[in-house]
Length: 451
Image (cartoon, rainbow, N blue to C red):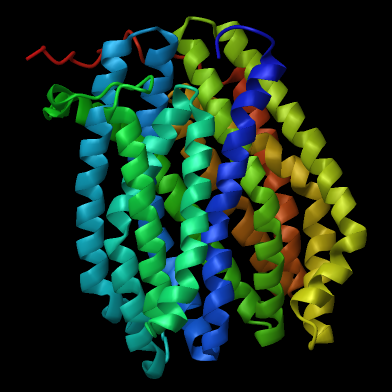
C-alpha cells in the first residue's frame, strides 16, 4: 500500500472490503427472509433483538479497530515481529471482552426487554433468540478482529472469501434448522452462530498456519499489559463512536414513531434501503484507514494525505452518482417492499428523495474519519461523529419534525443537515487539525522472546 499509483491501490483494497460489508448485511437479509414464514411474532422478535445485540457489538468493535490501526502502521514500517505481537494481543483482548459481553447479555436480556416495553408474549421468544445470538458473540468478535487485521496488512480478498462462505452456509442452514428440524426462531440464531464459528475457524487457520502475513505463535499470546492499556486508549473512543451512533439511530426511530405506525414503517424501509449504500461508504472508510496507516508507518505522510483527498473525492463522486440514479427508481422499489400500503410507499419514497442526493456528502466525512483512524486519532473521529449526530442531526430532527410543518419529513431532512455539517468539520480538521502522527516510534510493543 506504500508504493504504486494511489487510485489503483485504493480500489484494490476497497473493493473486497466494500463487498464484505455488503455481505455482513446479508446475514440479516437471509434470516429475515426465512423467519418471515413463521408469522408476525417471529418477525417482531428478531426485529426487537437487533438494537440490543448491536449496541454490544458496537461497544466491542473498538478493540478490533485499535488492532487494525496499529498493525497497519507497523506493517508499513516493516516491523513484522511487532505486527504478530499486536495481532495476538488483540485477539486476547477481544476474546476476553466477547466472553464478558456474552455473559452480560445473557443476564440482562429479559429485564431489558421488559424495561423497553416489549409485549409480554414476545419477551420469551425474543430472549430465547438473543441468548443464542449472545453466545455467538465470541466467534463473531474473533472473526471481526482477524478480518480487520488481515485487511490492515492487505489480505482483503481472503477476508471477503471467508465472509462469502459464511453467508452461504447461513443461507443453507436457515431452512434446515428453522423448518426441517422445527427449531423456529431459535434455528435462525443457531444457523448464524454456526456460520460465524466456521468463519472464525477459517480465519484462525489462516493466521496460525504461516500462510499469511501474520505469523502467530504461542509465544505471541503471553499477556502484555502495557500494550493492552495502549490499545484500550486507541480503541475506547472507537467503541464509544460506534455505540453512540447505534443508540442515536434508535432515538431517530423513536422520533419517527411519534407520527404513527406508517411513518415508523417508512423510516424502517428507507433506512434499510440506504444501508445498502452506507455499506460501501463504510468500506471505503476502512480501506482509507488501512492505506493511510501503512503510509504513516512508512513515513510517507504526503502519501497518507493524498490518500485522504483521493478517497474523499472518490466517495463524493461515486455516491452522488448512485444517489441521483436511485431517485427515479425509488417509487418502484418502495412499492415492491410494501405493496399493500400506499401511504407507507409515499412516505418512504419521500425519505429516498431527501436522503439519496446527499449520499456523496455522507461519504466525504466517513472517508476523512478513516484518515484519522488510520493515524490513530480515534478521539478526533469520535468527537466529529458525536457532534454530527448529537449536535446537529438529533436536534435538527426534533426541531424540524415538531416545530415546523415538515412533520416526519423533518426526520428525513436531519440526515442532510448532519452530513453537510460533518463534511465541513471533517474537511477543516483534515486541512488544519493535529491528526498527523505515527504510533510506531511511540513506545513500540514489546517483542516476545523466542522459546
